Length: 55
Image 1 (cartoon, helix red, strand yellow):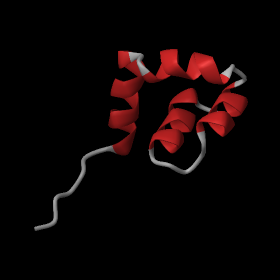
Image 2: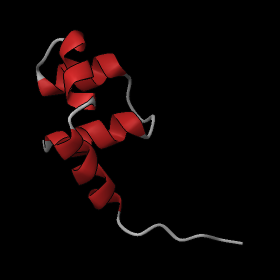
Image 3: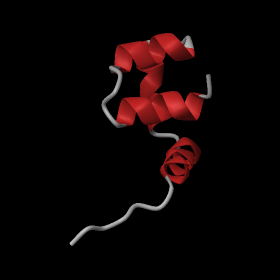
Image 4: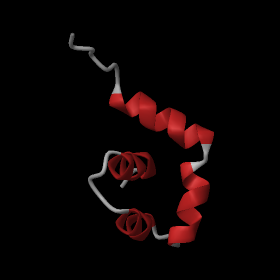
């Protein structure tokens, strides 16, 4: 599974940080490093695509 999609699912609240770490095969403490990685943050924003604004 694509790491960016797993992290995106965590950020959206679909899975817990423990589940995210387990899927990625890393320790929960290592998740902090991934969450602070600007490249992964940029990619997850790009995966969402353009957001519409409803007035």
